[in-house]
Length: 254
Image 1 (cartoon, rainbow, N blue to C red):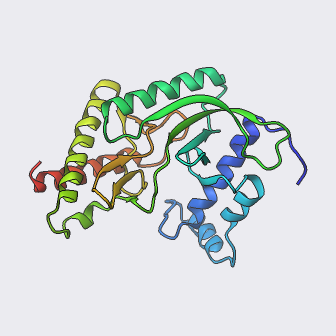
Image 2: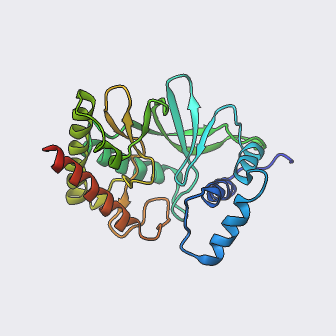
């Protein structure tokens, strides 16, 4: 590949193309479109991963952690991660986008204090593309780096099978705090926290049962979000997740 002039449009296209193949290759993902599901089935049957090939082609994989729908996540030293946000709303200028991201992050982290991961928002040069002539200035979320082998995706249905323990008590308290914070967020800002059960955003520590929300950008009440997408049925999924967490907390005595 030749060196390219990396601008916001090119970066967004690379981000979106790399993210969508992750979902296409995910075994349990249903696009809701039968024709598209056939395409996904074909990709899954290939003897190699298109998603992994894209990551190696476009990104510095020595630092790359993940390409998510919202951001490209890379390591920042030993104890932090940077989430570069290449998807942006329309022609919004970079500084305005930063300010809006900061506003939404602050709303989530304040309402879900103690659960939502503390996050700093800034503008940094994205030195993560392999073939860019110059780094692209980008809005970045910086967070503490969690060991995802310790902080595993929460499976609330599995909690019922656990024996009583201080860790389970801690989980119940964390989920109760998350529910109270989600209610504040919806009432005061008309936002939903991104706590869908299938997203992997709600994490539980295997060491002490603590609950952490790692993705702190919210959805709006109409199902859209700042980056401009509107996943089908997302509000229904978020509402169902809230109901499931409420049932557990209620059964646990919260």
